[in-house]
Length: 303
Image (cartoon, rainbow, N blue to C red; front, top):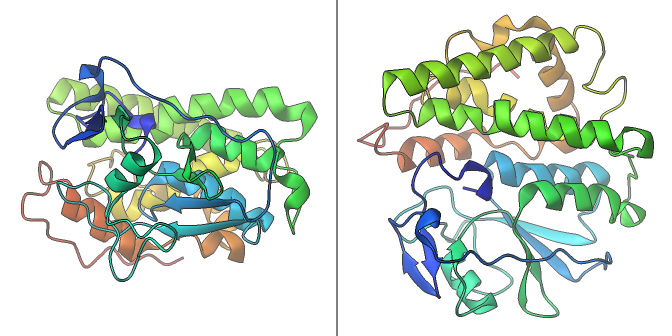
């Protein structure tokens, strides 16, 4: 799904341009990386993302909320994944390069690439290559370097809060965004119990924090809110059931739940969320958790 969940479960990789659907990144002799553009240039880049992936949701949220959609085009891969990894289909085609899947896209960018095949991918249409695939740095770059091109120039990373935002984003990544996967992919009771304890203690801390302010850093939305929100909007439909992250229901965290509802009420945020797509992806993909790939009819989500 993203570099963000390395170590949680084996992920398919390319090794010197050859696709290995059951190989872990730690088995690679080296892992190639990409470098984000230093200068924002409207019309040059395209974001490939997935409506399912919470990490890919970060940069997509920034683009939509800031109104960068004229500067950077976006599209999603298909909801369901098979042994070929992230695919394109009739409903979600690759309109830029005409590839069948992300493996082909990475091979096009670098025929000898070694590393994960993941979303999000920032594609450079001028150089015909990948400009970046790390969601955290991409979201930060879009919120800062690209701000002059925004139609709604919301300052998601104010200079006086940048250090605090970066620090909290790292904490959220380790204790919430990534930790929910540790819960869901645990293969023994002890690992599950430890991960669940860390996750729900973090949610308690966030609930207390949000009892004192509207958003994580005060009364204005910042990038930290766009790091936390992708996990929250998947919690009821996916994580509480599919990942057994159900020590407490999300609704029981009064301030945290109010905060989520506050954010999803913003149209530019709400339109980035597709719960049915998310359910199709998670429940179909993880056969080690849900062997028959049955997608539940519920729960009914009120928001």
